[in-house]
Every structure is written in structure tokens, then in C-alpha cells.
Image (cartoon, rainbow, N blue to C red; front, side, top):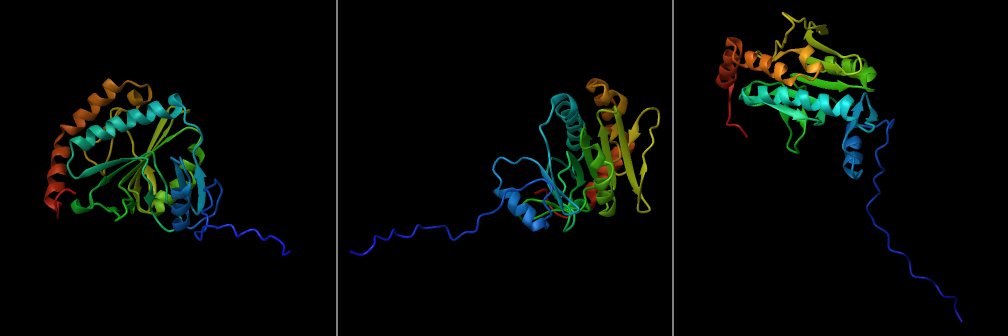
Length: 239
């Protein structure tokens, strides 16, 4: 009697995609492939070819400050046709860097902005403003990521250091980031005229006061001129 031979077990011909892990050294394409194949993953970044992944998010250190910042960015976006705001969207900056800033504000490419939306829905190129709400991530936000944003031409970079109760806002000048200084306790964006930030009110959670200053900026002459300039530059309908 011949020995019984079990039939071969069918296996998938598709190679298994490894999960994304913090500390992985990957190309941008491989980073995206593993990100898409990792169930439930909400936030991961590729910074100088290394994967960084967020820990659990606390409301007091990140959730509340993030929401307040988004409220002000949203108010400005509503009043400024030609400007877009993203919330935790991945940005393809270069072949080694795909950060996922807490927020970004950009000028639409049809209005002269320096980034564009790819065919598969990613922002490609440097947004005009990147925003990070930093608790435990402050070291990378003000060091490695700071250099990456500067090198790729992000024109303004805002870091809210929540533990330190401080907001740092930088503008790119001559290839270097220099601090934007407050005037009468208000920091005014140079790239987005009328985007006025009452940092002290925002930090202490007084959104009524912070929004009042933002609305003053939106009603300013400089904002009106900026809106007109954006519309004059527009080359195609709003997508």
C-alpha cells in the first residue's frame, strides 16, 4: 500500500505586506504601502527616511489645543476663497519625508500656491503654513522636522509647545526660519494677510477673545486685498 500523501495547501500568490513599525527605515513608496496595509493606523510620519508613530492622544495636551487651532484656521479659510486647510493630512515633501502635520494651510495651486493635490489625493509639495501642536513630540518638531520643513520651503511654521504654554511662529527668510514677532500682543502672518493670532488667549483657552482678534484680521484692508489678489490669479474653477 502506498503512503498517503496530503494534498498541497493552497497559498496566496500575493506577497504579505509587513506592518508599519516605528523606527523603520523606508522609502516613501514603501512607507505608503505599509501604511495602507496596517489596519486601524491613524497617524504615522516618514521623517528623513525614518518612521515615527503617535502614542495615545490626551485631550488636555493635544485634543483641546488642536481643536481650538483648527477653529481659527477654519474661520480664516471660510473668509478666504483660494485658501485650503488640512487636518492631519500626509504631505509628500520629498523622497525621504512624508510628514503628517496637525494642520496645514495652503494656497490653492490654481491661485498660485506652491503645492498641489495629486491624482491619488495627497498634498504634494510644501504648504505655505505647517502647524504642529506639540506635547511629547516637541523635540522632533523643533529639530528634525523643523529642518525638513525649512529645506522644502514651507514658508511659515507654527509650533504650539503645550507643556511650555508657548507658541513659536517662524517665517522663511533667506533660507532660514526667523521668529515672527508680536505687535500689540498679536502675531500676524505675512503669507496669509489677515490671519491674526492672539497667542495668549489661545493658550489659555479663551476662544472668544482669540476669535475676536481673528475676525478683526479678516475685516482688515490687507485681508481684502489678499482675497482679491487670489481671485485675480485664479486659473481654473474651484475643484
